[in-house]
Image 1 (cartoon, rainbow, N blue to C red):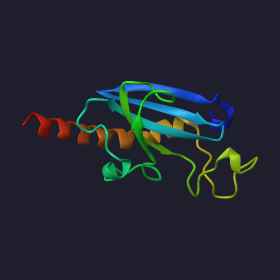
Image 2: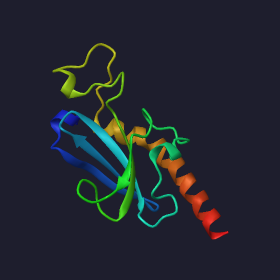
Image 3: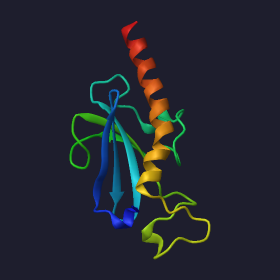
Image 4: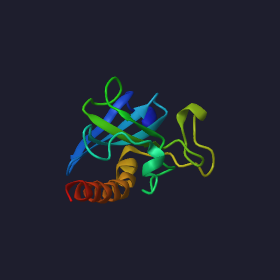
Length: 131
């Protein structure tokens, strides 16, 4: 399933050992992905540039609390799939040569490494906090 075929909003939502992960279809154009930490976690509240040591597709582009657009009770770090080389439906009817037209399954798979390394950072922050 591609973003342009999805309803606008959350199209995937799951939990992974203390993290909440969501994928949104944005304006039926492209996907965005987010990792949520409980709002009181020691890694919550930072600017997304401060967690940039984690490799993520195109780099982190969002950090903020849940509420109107995201589930409340979490602090979210997000990235998108509309960078140079990615196809976004808002750019035209079909991808240009060489543009990646991401499917939901590919976004979920791509997020796996980011989730893995974010888990390592989360656990390190908790060990430091508890020391």
